[in-house]
Amino acid sequence: MFGEGAINKVADEIHALEGKKVLLVQDQALEKVGVAEQVMAPLKAHGIPYVLYDQVTSEPEPSLADQGAALAREEGCDLVVGVGGGSSLDVAKAVAMLAKNDGKAEDYIGLETVPMPGLPTIMVPTTAGTGSEVTFTAVFTMREKKAKGGINSRFMYPDLALLDPELTLSLPPNVTATTGMDALTHAIEAFTSLQSNPMSDLVAKEAIALIGANLKRAVEQGGDLEARREMLLGSLLGGLALASAGVGACHALAYPLGAFFDIPHGMANAVLLPYIMDYNLSSAEAKYAEAASLMGEKDPQQSGESAAEQSVKLVRRLSQNIGIPQRLRDLDIPESDIEKMAEMAMTVARPIANNPRKMTKEAATEIYEAAF
Ligand SMILES: [Fe+2]
Image (tube, rainbow, N blue to C red):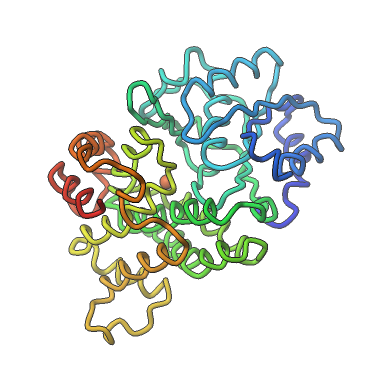
């Protein structure tokens, strides 16, 4: 469900899914900007009982999902509504799953490890970024183990993605920028993934065009509803593309930045994307050339560069224009840790396997060095 005011239909959708008592999963930041109230008001107006779980933090630990699921069981909730950025949506999806499956969130990290469907879910993204509202993944950070991993299961697909652009109007510029670059990364990586297919290409291309045309505008003029709408649509399509074709090495190399240094997911991808594209250039030329034209490049020959090279330049320019740091050193990543980051990146198996150019530990090290 998509459109301005869509959130006012949330009560009807809860009824349609036969929800009698809702667990609302979100982070505390939403209360400060009044978005939480925009979601709760229709529940109150329709007399739908709900319980709030608002302990979600950025790059969440799996224990947060365990806590939320315990609350859902205690309170007898039979439907989960997730509201927020990727962290809140991922926790909400895992909470709904754990409410019907034994054990802890960490036990289910892996591919198709979940035996039973969870509670029905409605996902309400408030960032134009992760696309988590349409994917089967919930990503968690295990800080003690310095690891990141995802629960990936067919039972984690949300029942409804409810996207209301008005809920994204209060996003600050830096979050708009980093989450928007995450969405662009999904679109570009899905488009060039070895698993890409005609259906994922359709949505990936539309996502690249929408994000290319609207991200800068949304960062500079947060109140521009049209730019916000196009960005939210772009991130949804990016999510659908990645749900079908997967992501690539940028996501794999971004993971260690989150696990070791708590760099938010969007920021990690944003910094690394141009460097990964540089590396992939020779193996994805036709698609990168197409991406350049989708991002508005009209005459690539003028500068003597190929259209594919232009796409890297366009992404880099966009990222500079919206204030993304351009180097790992700007994020205080120590150069001495590059070796162990490359080691960990290579364990993020599926994105590594999807990458259009073969990724090795040596290549990952070189990419980090270049980005440093
Ligand atoms: Fe992502």
